[in-house]
Amino acid sequence: MAVVKVSLGPRSYSVHVDPGGLDRLGSLLARRYDTRRCALVTSPRVFRHHGRRAQASLSRAGWAVETFITPDGERVKTPTQVAALHRRLAGARLDRTHPIVVLAGGTLGDMAGFAAATYLRGVPLVHVPTTLMAQVDSAVGGKTGVNLPQGKNLVGAFWQPGLVLCDPNVLATLPEKEFRSGLAEVIKYGCIASPALLARLRTTLTRGTWPGAQELGRWIVECVRIKARVVSLDEREGGLRRVLNFGHTYGHALEKTRGYGKLLHGEAVALGMVVALDVSRRCAGLDAVTEGSIVELIKHCFPDLSFPRVTWTAAAKAMGADKKTTAGRNVWIVLQRPGRPGVFTPVDADVRRSIERARHVWA
View (tube, rainbow, N blue to C red):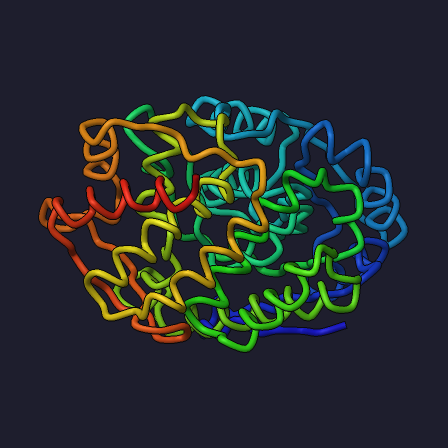
């Protein structure tokens, strides 16, 4: 087991990367909280695979568990669903001492996290992420939120969990499409912070094999360490934390213009990184050989993914509504080289050319 600390003063917490750790969930929570009542929030599919084990672990440690099975997915990640969860929490008479334990992937993690941040003005939150995407990224860092018709994650709050438990073994039940989606975030971390991780990804993935459990655990730990370091220095995205958005500017625009749920988040980020890499070559000095090698790695991970045709007008409107927009201009995270990200606000003409070239390169 590896334990990574997110250092935020009184809001500090630990991320446990522990194969088989789901069976130790109850005892881990008992060491963190004095109460013995909690809410378990999960989706129908995740409950079928892992819900009984989570309930059993909590019960063995003396927890009284209120289980809430709720819809998951970007299309239902809305204020309406959060309000429904609020009503269920209130109906169960959960109070401010009772943690909400989220056994789910990233979308339900974001939604239930926002419910925890706003129910009774904030209750304890525990993440037990069940997708690669959530284990390496969304469960760590305290971002919660829901979508609006105008854009992704436009309503939310920073609400740090008190504990995160990543059990890599639960990923064995993850559909291949969702596993590939999570790889986009792993590649992102290699790009912005770890050339060594990027090299290991290339070595493993381009030979046509998935990582073994041990190697996968190492990838998760390294990504969590990178994110923990960034979040510890910039909790609320005032500066450094923006580098975690590499690939997300155009990625979020694709999610919105295609309709939430049509593209998985990681698929959109993968295509967004291809665009961002071209912007990086045009505007930040990234060499073409490095750009090409990273694009090939991304393409290898998403062999069946098509690059959607979105009009420039629609893309520009979606990017303009993004929460990362500053003074009417889109903020892009670019790479000077792997491990050396920067912030840039390119002109629209360059972005448009990069989108067209990315679509051509992807074909």
